[in-house]
Length: 110
Image 1: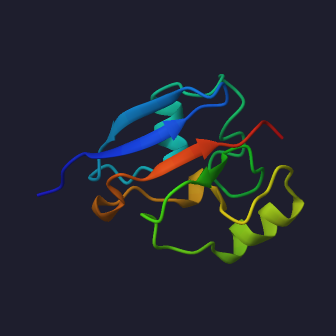
Image 2: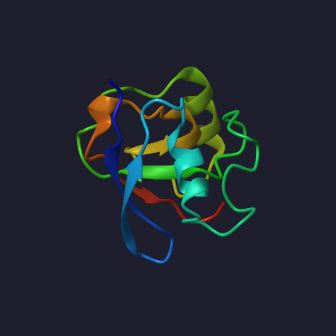
């Protein structure tokens, strides 16, 4: 049976939030950030989660996430600002049970 997992998110003000994320709703990290209002309205998920704007860029802070960037994500991050080796687009990270304990930081605005 699906269960909620805990994801640790540091917002753009440096405040860390420990949030519960449902694994049975097909959500991604960008949608979770919006759901908990951890970024100012209109500053994250501008393209609607299509990997076309990098407004949901985040930094993965631990090794819980086992997936790699997809081609669309790689292409968008090549054009984005504030990119680091461990940057990901939140819209491309689906929330799965095996991600319990994932720690991310929301990147500065583009």
